[in-house]
Length: 151
Image 1 (spheres, rainbow, N blue to C red):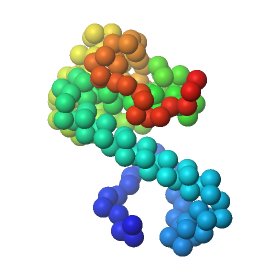
Image 2 (tube, one colour; image 1 turned 180 degrees about the vertical axis):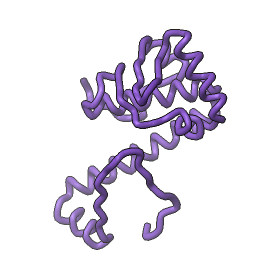
Image 3 (cartoon, rainbow, N blue to C red; image 1 turned 120 degrees about the horizontal axis):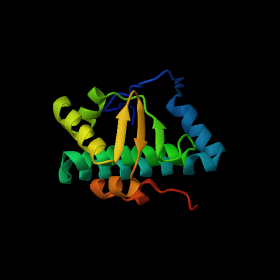
Image 4 (tube, one colour; image 1 turned 60 degrees about the horizontal axis):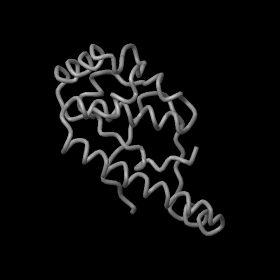
């Protein structure tokens, strides 16, 4: 595709590299493993989008936020940045609400409810999961759509 239907943004400082379509096509031809990895990335992105549609369409507000925390914790654990229970997350509640399809007020109430239930604490850019089983149950979370490597 020569034109995207979306934009990207970062919450923290990052480095971005741009490649022409021609350069990417040459790399895929010259390095077939790169083509396989790009294809896997595309399939993973599609799986995550399907899961997010499920999350927004089927889960209530508690489930949506629990699913967000479950997915982020699992993805950070997969790349070795987190143990899956404690994570630094450069997101504020004002970012969490629209990502989960609700108002800031409702997101605040849900996060408070999850904290009071002893499931998760989200403060100061840190997520602490206290009961991973309860979090996954509320979220109806099944990690298989992320295609984790066998442990």
